[in-house]
Length: 230
Image (cartoon, rainbow, N blue to C red; front, top):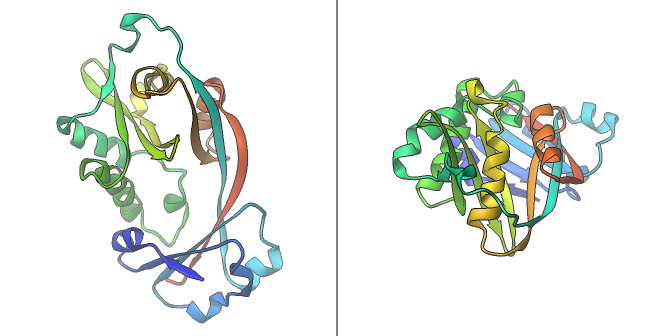
């Protein structure tokens, strides 16, 4: 019923579990009250308010998953001059950007998770790429010869997933997010036609604007709940 998330547990310093969409209704959350534990539920429908109150769980975020059928297009040679695949020299800059981004993610929204821990989670999430434990590609954008943003890509069979995308605050609204997505489609992926997926929070207007601008369409919505006994 409960599935241990070993990596997240190591970041939080206490046990983190996921519970599937079917099992949560038969689960007694209150048996775990006052224990150091995080239980996450992801469901395609809102949980009844009476169940939420009775079991002391909390709606943390509404998540939108987008997709697009990617096709290569002709792009001018110099268009991607400031976009490239990462190297180890970029690591510190990328981790700093990760630590200062994603403030709308569930780890920042859960008041029972310290902000310093939420920052550590996102930094270490991206750090796993450099340890060859997460991600197929990591693309960076530069501005004035400094790393301004990054895009982490996962592969799932024939499809690709935008796992994380972030641009440093003072370099936003310059089109760097769009360029990194186009670089993925036109310079990195070998196939001419592939599906690319991406998820973001329903209140993250900037991310939604980025994906819709790049012809992504909403595929489904998920509701994310936390039970945090701490």
